[in-house]
Length: 251
Image 1: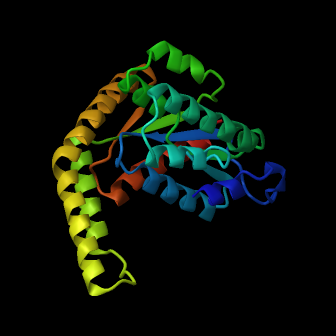
Image 2: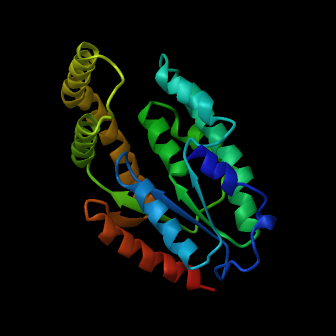
């Protein structure tokens, strides 16, 4: 993902002039709690717009080539202080703003963002940071033309996460180990799933509930366009395409 975005972050002046632009440059954001389907929908929108020869670029949370590795290490090692996470995510967003978002918009293109500042607003406040401090931190951000909020409940997020973990276990690639070692790995994976569906899921659900409450408040504050994310992928995509096309044709 990061490599793909590095390619998309190349100087927008290199984009062929044959690509069409919308009436005005557009920044389109998809938001929602974890597992709401944002990434899938952004990819489908990108493919659809590209097929119509629109100049379109995608950007996603935690994909800055300067910051992504730092964040990945921080997430796999001992947890950092919420303030440290907040500053790292802000650095990620700042770098992508200057490398991807502003250059694309300056050349009349479309930016599809898989999560935006609202993710920071929800997560950082859920982690106990001051609301106004967090929002001031992102003062440099470009204001989106539209924010689509893919709405699912925290309970649905839990169901999707458990299903995803089960799928990973069932579709795991064969390991180049002896039968004894493979059996041990299977036991460890099964134990991880049990922990995930019990105690681990409780913590996940509680945090998603906090996030959900923040998004519900921001929905009215920032005039999000609400799309029910519990619908089929195709149905959500159809709704998004109609709304996006209307936006692109506006003068």
